[in-house]
Image 1 (spheres, one colour):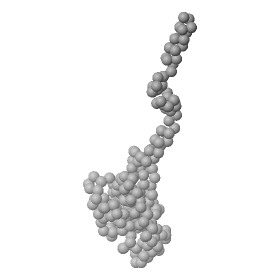
Image 2 (cartoon, rainbow, N blue to C red):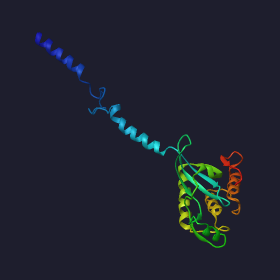
Image 3 (cartoon, rainbow, N blue to C red):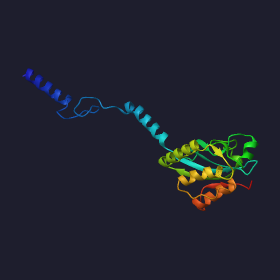
Image 4 (cartoon, helix red, strand yellow):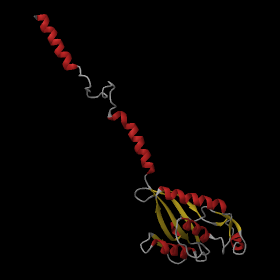
Length: 213
């Protein structure tokens, strides 16, 4: 009797400890006996994924801008990426201007084409020289298309000429590639940007107009 009682007791204990077929125990994979990963085990992967997604978050922009100069000014674009709060994370400049700081090519460029550059010029990123601007926000696909066009335009533009191939004409090509209407290229840069904003952005367009330069 004592032997049978001991045997029955051991059977009861085994049934209580071992799960039945198909039953899963806390911390184990279903039917596999492999422990499920804990929150601490998956945290690094989640952190990496979140970081990657954070890098993709943000708005892109292009800003049509003019600035003051000793002459009648300069028209160009600034484009790049903004954070959630609208702060600029990175930016780049594209604009057409004589490839020299000397006044001679600039003067000659009013009569004949002169060698040109299509990047940043002195004062482009200094807000105290800004005479007018119009900023447009873009999604990632729109931004990629605009940047691709700017790169193509930069690669194919080698000369500056004040009445035919000037900074307004360069910026106007970018604007038209985006589907915008553009004013005449013989306006002063400040007038050109203001007119561009009025023609396409409406009365509530986000922009800036400084005093006449």
